[in-house]
Each structure stands twice: as structure tokens, then as C-alpha cells.
Length: 166
Image 1: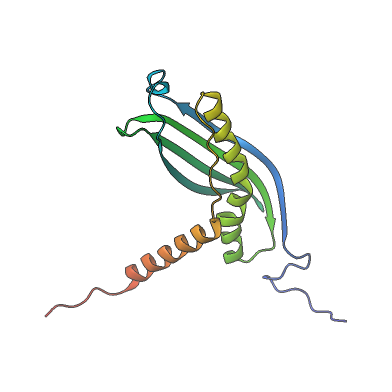
Image 2: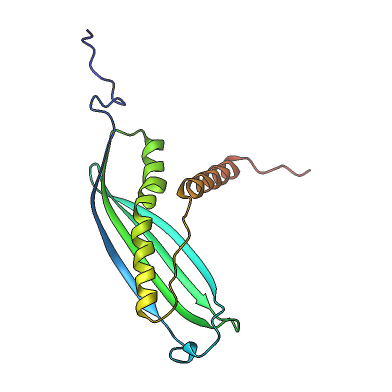
């Protein structure tokens, strides 16, 4: 039995993660060419734009927002529809080191939110009378790792002294 108290980086209760709430923060749908777009042959080009952000609400409580924009164009490169959803969640996250917290907020939480944003977009597209749009799964771990490497490279470039030219 040890009488040692935990060091500041140790959490005697271990890490804690709890989903508090999931909600739509913002949503919009535009179909600038309707009703004309419904008579065109349907050969869409779909572009997915995906971003995440987070902010600390209070202590160990964080809001994470997954922002997805879908732009669908026809063969003439005209916008058929634009669907945009900001799916948010409130998460309780305790007892994680800085890097683990960063990865949880940047990868795990968006992974939790993705099925909800996927359903919201598909529902909007169907209600607008377009064919179903089921977004393919997204590997948030790979996106987070790529973003982390890019940040490290930028920091490295900023800290490297400029070459001296004689």
C-alpha cells in the first residue's frame, strides 16, 4: 500500500469520456437551378468539404462542431444543389494528457458526429427531390494525423533560421 499522492498529470479515476448532447447547430439547402435541374440528365459531380472545430465550454466540457458542405454540379459545372450542415456535440472529457485530448477532440468526437451529419444531409437531399446521397465513411484518424504533421512542419519551418547567402 502506498501513501503517495498522485502527481499533477495523473488522474486517480482514469480518463472519462461522456457524450452530453448532439444537435444541429446550423443547416441550409439551396437548389439555384430548380426546377430546371430536374429535367437535366443526372450525372452529378459531388464535392465534399469537411471541417471541424472545438471550443472549451467549461472546465472539462467541450463543444465539437463538424461542418460539412456538399456541392453538387452538373456536366456544365452549374450548381445543382448545395447542402450544408454544422453538426455539434457537447462532450465531457477528463483525465487526458494534452496530445490525447487533442486527438479525441480532432478525431474521435468528429467520428461520433459523422453518422448524424450524414443522415441530416441525406434527408435534406431527399426532401428536395434529388436522388439519395449517402456520404462514404471518413477516416478522421488519418485526417487528424495529416493535420498534425502539417502543423509540425509549419512550426519547424518557422523555427529554422533563414539561410545566409554570401
